[in-house]
Length: 217
Image 1: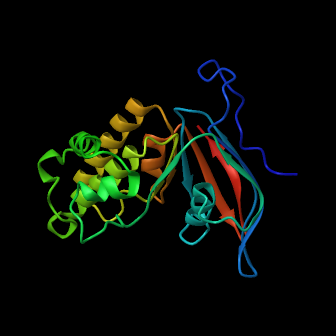
Image 2: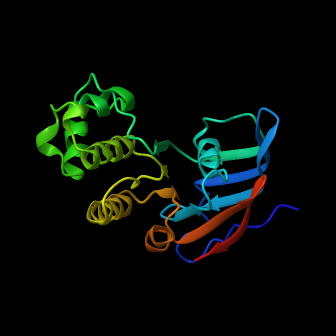
């Protein structure tokens, strides 16, 4: 039997269709099992944190949710659009900040400029990624994700390698954008404090192959 990590719809969510509905029985790379028996369901406006040791399979699970890994035993349904922010900003170095939004998302230049303004980069639309600090590159990656207008946002260690002050700023920025867009978010992190601060639920992966062994509010 799959471990139940779903929560019944409450007064806040009513009976609306879940944004994410995952029934994963098995996922492997080549012949090496990575994940097993994971069930997740998420409502709009909910943030879920995935925690666990390095290499346990958190990023692999995120790739399954993003549709980047399809060779798994199970079902994954997302009601709407998905956007993902990787550990590295993964920007196009030969394009400026505005183009890094318009090209992959098909947003208009005006929409891209609005997204840049939302993350505090309004004056850097014509700037190329190599002229941006790491913190600014991460803001740009976040702006690009929100420009998709996603129903499900996936964040893979989005605050890694930043100093504590920048991490605090980025978390505050994320909360503002998340609340303004009312979307479901899955956050991968190895920092328990980040999970507790940002998430409504925390799901821990453990074992080999990894499964979800606990869930907490």
